[in-house]
Amino acid sequence: MKKIALISVSDKTGIDSIASELSKMGYDIISTGGTAKYLISKGIKIIPISEFTKFEEILEGRVKTLHPIIHAGILAKSKKDIEDLRDSKYSLIDVVIVNLYPFEKTISKRGCTFSNAIENIDIGGPTLLRASAKNHDRVTVLTDPSDYSLVLKELAKNGKVRSSTRLKLAAKVFSKVSKYDSLISSYLNSKSIKAEDFMQEVININAHELDKLRYGENPHQKAKLYKISKPSLAAFDYNQLSGKALSFNNLVDTESAYSCVEQFSRPSCVIVKHANPCGAACADNLEQAYDYAYKTDPTSAFGGIIVFNKKPSSRLIKKIVEKQFVEVIAAPSFDKKVLDVIKNKPNIRILEIKLKGKNDLIYETKLLRDKLLIQEKDEKTVTKKSLSVVTKKKPTTKQLDDMLFAFKIARYVKSNSIVFVKNNKTLAIGAGQMSRIDSTNIAFNKSKKERISLKGSVMASEAFFPFRDNVDLAKKIGVSAIIQPGGSLNDNKIIDVADKHKLAMCFSHTRVFKH
Image (cartoon, rainbow, N blue to C red):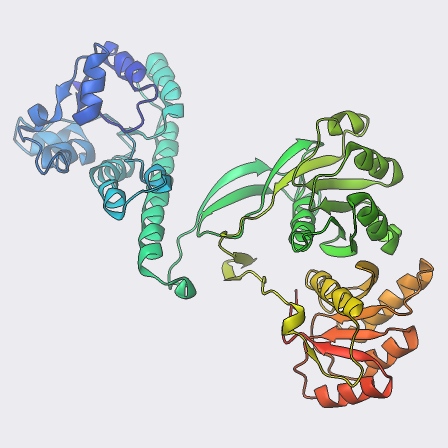
């Protein structure tokens, strides 16, 4: 029987080349619409699909490949299936080359109307692809121009495409069609579901591989990085300028530091180790901010992640790499000299991070093995106006500024978290303990080790105090003011203790607990 290839594509990349080669190999090319015109313009002989099916296109071309002659030719498992139909108009179709209307590209264009988006929902294309992929035991289906050369090579060498290749191509088809349907579903949901009702019963996730990581949490674990395009999540976009491949932990720590530092408008630096800030500061310039952040806990800063919210100078980068061992330095941008500065430090990763836009959607995810959690990103703004002074002693303006700074840092310290701050710089941080008093003691002991006085500092807790022990210890340490969410059954007792110790205390009324 005559070999037949059906070609109908939106993306014309390389299509004339593969059509020409298939024609030379003895294939009849059947085609439709714009693809047919394009191939004819390239001097390739084609059979119009309406001639093949003896059925004229209708509804402005929306119905052309949805025809029994086409789908019988694709879905027939063998020549015998066609012969059993006892109708000479049926023929086997051996190769199907189809890609879909550019729905994603269309809806990404500024000014795209809803009707234009709907018109770019492909119906015939996915049907052809699914049918061909289902019958991959006989049919070779292509939807990606990058696969054309492989198929031509196998046909030229063996006269047929290997079964393993057909299976691989079929799997790719179902991935493409699944993504396509998911994009359409997400688009329609975005038009019909209110933002506050984003958590539908079914959420389609589109993700594509970005990179193979150096390793996972540990060197024996393989890991890859994927970009999720749907549903829309809070963005974490970066460009690696130098250094060896990133690991799982590098990325987790960098995202944590980035999320923390992006809260500030003044020149700021956050140093993170094991997903927890170990030092942070706002200052008049980045060099001061780095110095203050580093002095909080130089021991933990070793091998840490350093992130700035503004462009650091090459002089500062040179100072950092000469002063400490660092895994990653990240900022919104770097000057051209930065690569010269670190040329003798090939392992240091320099990342440019795109700070979020005001209109970015703010959802985030966490995986629990085969379960996916989606929540709004914790970005509730806490200001002086949202604080309640609950003690007899009122905080000064300077203390209020330090309270807000400390609370922003506590937001990114794994719970239970305690943060001591003075002059918009961290003095000590206690993180990740099962008991809050243990976090306070850890922070206090770290300050003593670094010979940092906590006298006159403010103390921030990301969740309420259930007991008085932290307030008593705060007095002993020399703390002058405390910020905490409030909300404990013992709030009144805690306030009484603070009054007894003549401490100022504010409630934020917002818990920023991080697991």
